[in-house]
Length: 278
Image (cartoon, rainbow, N blue to C red):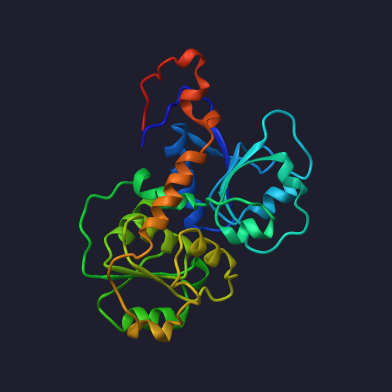
């Protein structure tokens, strides 16, 4: 990935308290789209919010206008309803994750997208899928007894820990013939790499973000998740029937990323960038 290190870093806010796969790929994708080094920042000092159900944080931290440019919200969603939407006047709303979020904040948007769908561009995979079935749990379920019994029940199953190195997790998902995931970004990353996938129960987690994403790409099969004991009998493999929805979401993500935050826009008179690194 190429970043222009001659520019100031882009300040991005993401959740750092727990090892979360979606948060781990957040700076990778924003760095890819902006061409800039990305640094973590507090919610009030951030240039952008992107991946994640962070709109509640945006509401808390941007109830009042701040000096200078507004914070950009790009592909962000809700995990529960919020009351009061005046805070949206204080942000640059580039794109929401999905229509459920849009409905909850009473916005008339017609295009949506989760930035995780661009991971195949930020981290291209040119290998081949293998004859194995990935199980990607929500990180809170990694020690679940049923999960480990499931993985042990079939030699084709491989457990993919979403708390691992983000690049490695993405690579392992991309090599699978099918993925069962209770991690939202396990599902999204599988979609990004063209790996068919099935939603399994994210025990203890809100379903809103999953349904928001499904609606954003026109995915009609994600009405309710499977339990662990239903996985062995579930269908595996096959083409992804909502590819057009994924393509539309990717187009929306590219079209809506703010030009003011891209490396070229920060150079006077369109001056060329200097030699980048990593």
